[in-house]
Image 1: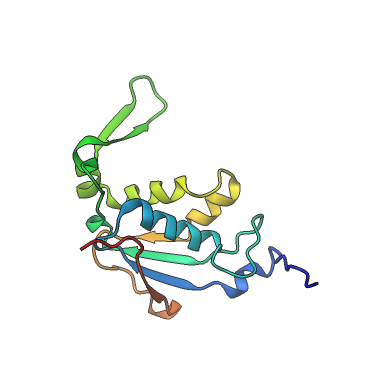
Image 2: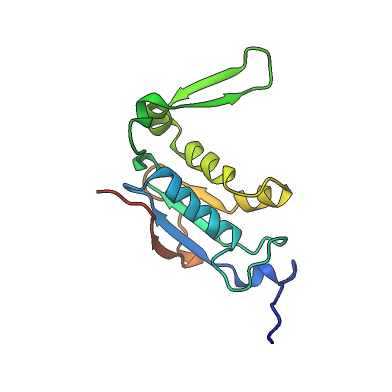
Length: 151
């Protein structure tokens, strides 16, 4: 019988990769699930739940993410400033036009575990509305296709 391996915190950062995902035409929930699994490291054979063993993810064209059904007009996203009367409501159309990076980041963060480890994982996510503005050529990212792409 073979023993399963648990990687340590000190060695987890040595085998990290960079992934690039084009979000053009992808459904928000399916893309967020794919990104959360990459950030968490669930695609690796030596996945350890209590160690940050995930990879870096770059998502571009976040302003071209789609929603299924009529969620763009009907569904609202809420944030609260923790002050009295500080509830802010935004529709899907406004979120897509003005806050695309925040929209995807919030969806991904909701799919990560609710602990301090998730705060470290979300810092490895880089989201851009249009083309990638920074140069990530030195990291040699692997290009992936987004889940749930609709034509």
